[in-house]
Image (tube, rainbow, N blue to C red; front, side, top):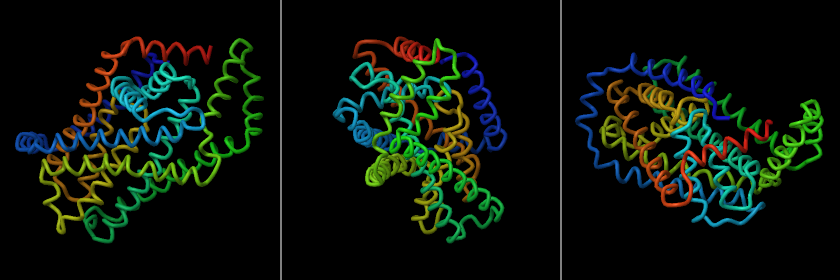
Length: 350
């Protein structure tokens, strides 16, 4: 599962975007911006991020409830460890580590846990697309994107529509499987073409995965999932907003309230791109798209680049440190956790 091929592929993607970032930013201006930044905003910004992690734990508790009732206090460190693993492993393999870690601490199996995490990612995507559409509408009406031309705005609009279609399509597919388990018969028939040595293991995985989709059985549950996803991104977006004050980015807009749709756009663009498999922590794609979002509204490349780098460091380092501390305090280690997740998922594929 955690093979060198995936690491190399992710590394190539990250190196590509790091190169694009490097060649499209004013390095001198970025250095000056980093030196002159007011880093007093880091602490409250990081605090907001950990609040958003708390809302992730609340949402996960709701998704897991049909399988087993688990307290938010028990889920919070599991979420933190999952994000720590995503920051240290390529290809978003931290999601597998998080599912395995939950399975170690509760009776929920890894496959079902992985399905619930997949639901989280789908609803995250929907909220981020909502952010993108809202910000584009507001910024277009306010003429703040007038200087970049209609083609760029049109391209971003098409990307938002395509992204929304993908996430909605996944919800429809998973909902059909959850509501009509008989549809899984098609999947099981396809599995019959696999070698007999791994056939039953794959069927067990699919069955347990379907168990994790139970929250999709009613429109009411799906609406609640969407509503529970909003505070996750409102508070994380709040971190993005607070750190923007370190570089006086809000002061560059008149009226200042326009910074809100700008931050919504940065939040959406920099996080939607992390769905693309990359190196640990999505280093490269995140910085490039966060910077490009600010360039779209007239922020100088050096300031935009400095903000993007500082923001990503603030997102990666604290949660990684806390996650490692959680593992250090409790039984086990990151290497053992990674090996266990790797062994379990490898056994599913033979």
